Image (cartoon, rainbow, N blue to C red; front, side, top):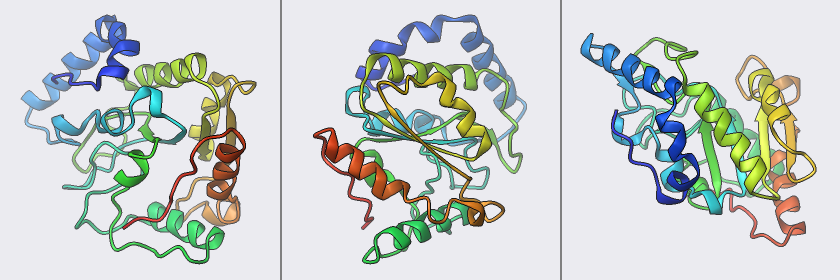
Length: 225
């Protein structure tokens, strides 16, 4: 696993890569690759969220759990899939909620959320790799320690970020965020199993833009071309 981290993130995270947990994680990934396992996303896209959204540009964080584990789905952005891949159910529900909040929102023909990331939406998964057809296969190997540190550093060194935490797993991260400096919005997960219990109607996208505007920041254009 070669580390090619965007420069502003490298400045705040460099020491993490020298810690024991990261060395163990690298060894684990090497072992799985040497055992012939296909790992997603591809190596050059593992840190894609950081490439699209530099540290000093983060305005919103949407936290996911695992990358997608199907061929050509994952590309390092939470909830997002590469163009040409069917839109997964959770992302379909995210688009439905956007349509609820913005009646003129057109559901796009693809699920690539790079346009959000380029506007300052950090699409961060808690675990940054997974094995083909094995959901959760790289949990508890060190990634969570790294991404928890990402959340903590954003909380400590930045101000006025909106954190969107959907589902029990993501909402548990709220304890890491200084809510005197940032806004945390919590809702059920957008998966088909829970979207109807409060994700639909949460108005998180509209609320996010209201908060950004109040803080003198440019709103997110949620429409995807």
